[in-house]
Image (cartoon, rainbow over all chains, first blue to last red; front, top):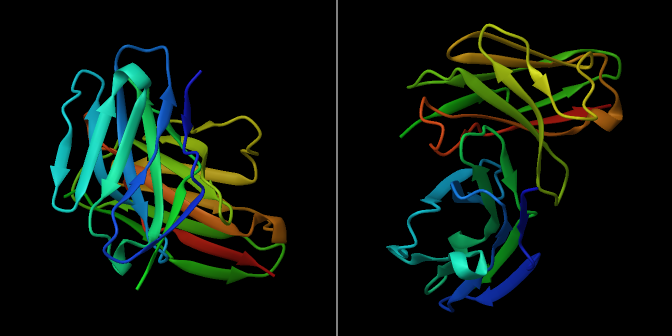
Amino acid sequence: AQKVTQAQTEISVVEKEDVTLDCVYETRDTTYYLFWYKQPPSGELVFLIRRNSFDEQNEISGRYSWNFQKSTSSFNFTITASQVVDSAVYFCALLRGGYQKVTFGIGTKLQVIP
Amino acid sequence: GAVVSQHPSWVICKSGTSVKIECRSLDFQATTMFWYRQFPKQSLMLMATSNEGSKATYEQGVEKDKFLINHASLTLSTLTVTSAHPEDSSFYICSARDTTVSSPLHFGNGTRLTVT
């Protein structure tokens, strides 16, 4: 069975602090894909990143960075120098290779306080 | 990037009436679209997989006669909530993926349904 665990349900940080959102996944498949999505208060879901199971390279995009470690089945997301606009719910998701259904974590609500 | 348009963004209807929600892929063809439901402060729950030209595949526990899905073209899927009741009030989100299975899902902006 597939499972995505986001143990942090809510996080509050002060603006300019760094924050890491944790994601741990479970799957028996060797081919799979991991995603992060952002859901701001307006409700839409914004795609942030996709990583496949064969690519453990970490990625940095501006203030965002992702750390993928297969050994610990984790795909953590770090926001550097957080801003108020980063306040949102962030979802980690897993897609099994060859399948259509995406499994979402419960989401982590991030509040950045000015 | 791929854009998915969902309409309406919010709707209020009376109990017993039906509501139709549209989901369009604007710049790509989607043979498969997905309908999710999200309760407040909860994650997304997959309701059904909409397949172009064929019947939708519903997840366990989702009433197919209540949530009618039609995927008549490669760019349009509709979800009709029939005989809506207050407990159907929720945030409904559609998503689509372009032809590559591993491509990320692109989501519509969601529809907030309130049944009074």
